[in-house]
Length: 139
Image 1 (cartoon, one colour):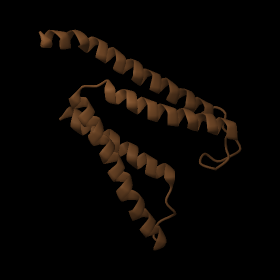
Image 2 (cartoon, helix red, strand yellow; image 1 turned 45 degrees about the horizontal axis):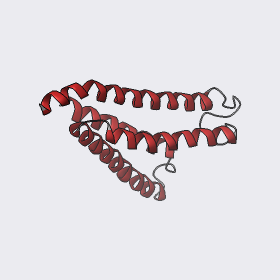
Image 3 (cartoon, helix red, strand yellow; image 1 turned 60 degrees about the horizontal axis):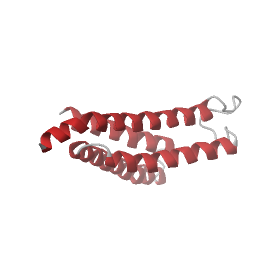
């Protein structure tokens, strides 16, 4: 009897998951549009102050809301296995950044590499998260 109830709720769970992910994707797309299409064309691609401050504040607020609220919602939607996979990928991303920054910083202090760049550190964390998710999901 319990098994039948779980099977009946599975389509609802998947629908909720896709609605949350779709909403977060839409917010991310909107945030990217706010920044990308209204960036100062005279400024270099990674230069500071290349977008108006009010757009930066709106985009940052959308990011904070999406990651905070979205993470909370997504911990309640997936099953236990999916939740474990997400926890492991988050730890892997954090470890990648935790290893990358001090190493880069020390090498920078030694004059071997350029100053640590937040964008590259973020990309390292995202790459680690994607690789870990693919590893745990597809194995």
